[in-house]
Image 1 (tube, rainbow, N blue to C red):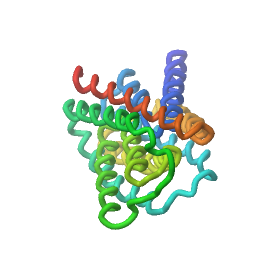
Image 2: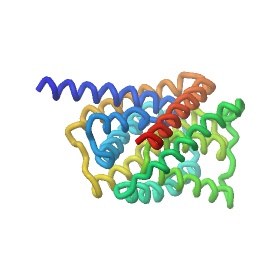
Image 3: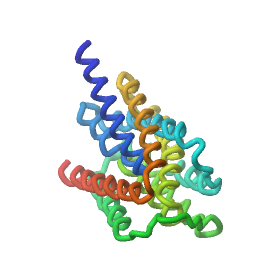
Image 4: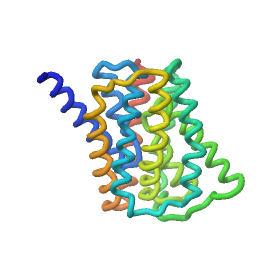
Amino acid sequence: MIADMFEQVVLLVISFLANTFSAFSGGGAGLIQFPALIFLGLPFSIALATHKIASVALGLGAVLRHRRTYLFHPRLVAAVLIGGLPGVLLGAWVIVEVHDNLATTMLGILTLSLGIYSICSPNLGAQVTVRHLHGTSYLTGLLVLFVIGVLNGSLSSGSGLFVTLWLVSWFGLDYRQAVAITLVYVGIFWNGTGAVVLNILSSVQWSWLPALLLGSLAGGYLGAHLSIVKSNRMIKRAFETITLLIGLKLLFQGTWT
């Protein structure tokens, strides 16, 4: 009994910290929570399915804080859902059978490049200039979101950061608005879709979910609150820090495992 209670407390703390950082910076809960589940003994696919279900609560926690803060542009919301959800389905379907270290390494390199690109672009996301909402440029945005969705459904770690940066760099949002859209729509709909598919194809550690869900919900709310009250520049710096950490973690995982 004491061992079970200690395990639940550990899961709660891990989930709360991971999702607070994620909700503040626009992604990256998988940097802490997902590998922690594997470290605690879950196989890859079961850890991924359990993490996905818990991450839905991150989006719900963000909704509780963001519900009166932003009016999201409907074409941007449509892009995230229409472009990303098919990719999530594909990624979740494939990852149950395949886990490629080379893909993990390449994802780490790409994630590092996102952080470096943001650091080298000091004016990126400084102001809102919404663009690329029509024609071929809109379709390009959908295609990239589809690719990010595949990453979300399969490798999981850091995919929300890709969405955040794409909303900033391509669609012209500032970091604060991009983080809000990522938290709500990636957190609930992308992760929810991945969780359903992985639950069908794999298994879930149901006994761990209460602590993980509570930590995700509370962390999502707190992180969303911080992303509202803190400056856009601070959010940008948090994004860059989390991106670099995730990139290094993925490189290490892909190279040494």
